[in-house]
Length: 607
Image 1 (cartoon, rainbow, N blue to C red):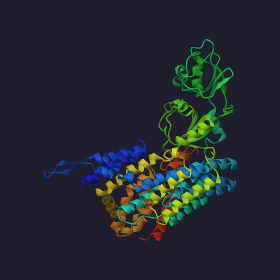
Image 2: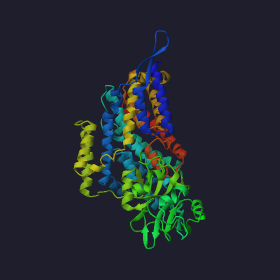
Image 3: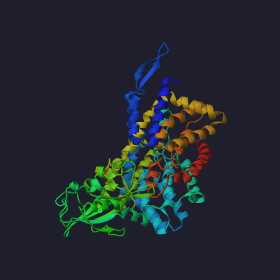
Image 4: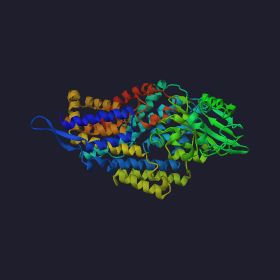
């Protein structure tokens, strides 16, 4: 083992710890790795047995930055934009409407229908895009059929992961293993090369939930339940400004209502004038009625100071919507602009013109000082504001509404145009006329020219944190190759399992990949293991294709934890799940898919 290999292993350990602990955002970890690979000092043995500095950096600057020009990364960018075009043109909404029409009241039938629908959508569009369309529809159907959201949302998340295995563009791991093959001198995989194994994978998920999986799903309270909604809304109070109040003539910022007592001012009544969007600069006057939201104890503390008088504590049935003002429940998705900020730091009122009335996290509502709670991915926020402002916030800042939202343009012509463009991209790539990255970028141009995607939304529709994560971790895969680390790991894997044949080695690779993807991005896990998979095949003297296809399947099985994939993070809070609910429902499916993969993959892709 050389000093360079030791150095790469140290970097790998640090990366895994950072990904697993989430002390830093995943995309920042990727950029940190990129910088380390270029700047880390590399030592070599001197003739006297010591170590001397050989150079700085395991990779050159060109090698480290090559990920940002990688065709797989550009394809991922194009797929985000094309998915947005499909959503905006109403393609996916029409599919969701069809799902609502055919869904019955049977939990079993609805579960299977959800998995198949989201799986087929995820084959041609981004997972989060598919979830954004189907999540509100599934919640609405579940409410109509009196089926707990927790019985439906894990199948929805799992189905989106399983469906990505159907095509080359369905999930980033498929694109990444294809690019790894190209980089190693092998022919890349084509758009529909994944279809036979993808059908087997999706069918396995459907059969699993039809026979046994649905009995492993919990029944949990959800913020979409009426009782949970009451929990989020119940701490509302009306306060009046008495004649002797020291707050008379002071602005809201000067009053300290938010900063000192953790309360939010929802509206201010001044005679017949109602200020539904109060700002920090609004001045309080004697006789004003101030409606606040917060913990009951904090309201009483403020009243006890004599600065404001308590009129009434509003209950959960108090009207909070009137005229242009309404409420919306929405999930904070990975990559949201205000992640890790408190409600005060995010400045929802001034920046977006909406109020945060409640937060639901890990199965329960948070009532204590909402202004001090740092927002996390998967949180469900109860928002209040005008319909236009709420829609704009959800569309641009990383929120996924739990209520059905109509697409921007549902005209039949626009819908057919967007669907035709996506079909053209797939056909051009599948026929070999254009590289998938070029076909995708051509599709993006067509979406903009035809009006399916607005130029102003072009870049906002891309999940840049995912793009940076992939581009930043690709150099680590290069480092595994150029330093000989991939060969070293492959040799060890073959030494431990090779005596039992390539099928056992394939099983070992699947298990390693599955465990990695439970705690880190599936794209990052694929980048790390793709060079190893190809090297293992070379060491065994067999075809690399069954190994990379199995790797792509394994890194799409982040079923055992809610943090392994962004779709699981999205459904975590709306389903009211607990951490181990995913392990209980997901572990048997992982083992079942391992068995199916070991049977099907070698049949489709012989050794």
